Image (tube, rainbow, N blue to C red; front, side, top):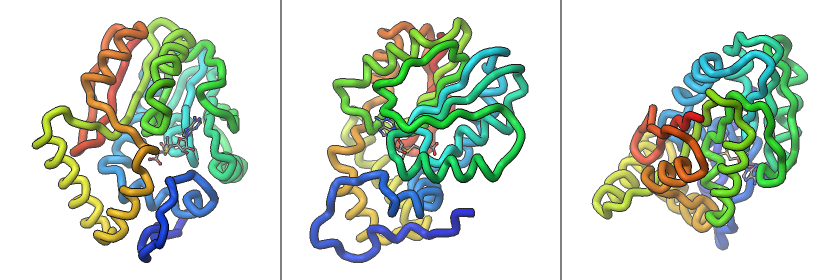
Amino acid sequence: MYPNKDSLYASPLGEIGAFKFDDKVVDVFPDMISRSVPGYSAIISAIGLLANRFCQDHSRCYDLGCSLGAATLSMRQQINAKECRIIAIDNSEAMVRQLRQVLAREEGGVDVEVQCADIRDVDLNDASVVVLNFTLQFIPLADRKALLSKVYQGMLPGGVLILSEKLRFSDNRQQELQTEMHHAFKKAQGYSDLEISQKRTALENVLIAETFAEHQQRLLEVGFSSVEVWFQYFNFASMIALK
Ligand code: GEK
């Protein structure tokens, strides 16, 4: 359905603007994310399994920063709970427009409501599952705690937050090694050195990675009772936080 190959950074660019989730990115997004994020498709499948494990009857599942709805669709296919609803939110109009078209073509499964909004401004209620799949890393650092606190407050007892992020490492050698291995992964996926370096420049100051310890501490501070990594592939990890 999305055959377009990501070549946005393949030619030398005079000026590299800050990365934006616009129409050009939407056209190539599935190819871009699966060739850039090690383990992306494994995480998407597992989000469906986890959502089915945690989704409670009459509750809501939120996909915050849903992009083209990969996690939403995985949850929709795998959740068996009764009378639940998935709420997929993204503030990129281009992403939301495309997701609405995908959903209109697909039938069956859990009801999905799509909202074009900033996840910092929306209210969450009766949530049994909340997904932040590589989204928190794009939220300004100063706003992250308030957002996670709101997520916690909107969750039902027994709920789960699935938080996937690019990680930073406090040890310099680890940071260099994991970055090098991520670039090796991207090269193995067909990206050139030029593409890797131009994309890196575009993401500077846009994607701000934190360490696992920073994520864990903040999640515990806002109220979660337990936070662990369930998946990691180089500097990309997915965590489970339990209410
Ligand atoms: C997936 N979860 O395929 N409010 C709403 N959306 C936002 C905000 C915000 N403040 N900031 C960024 N976004 C998806 C992948 S991509 C990750 C998530 C990536 C949105 C942004 O528009 C984009 O669609 C998404 O967060 C991040 O499972 O491209 O590396």
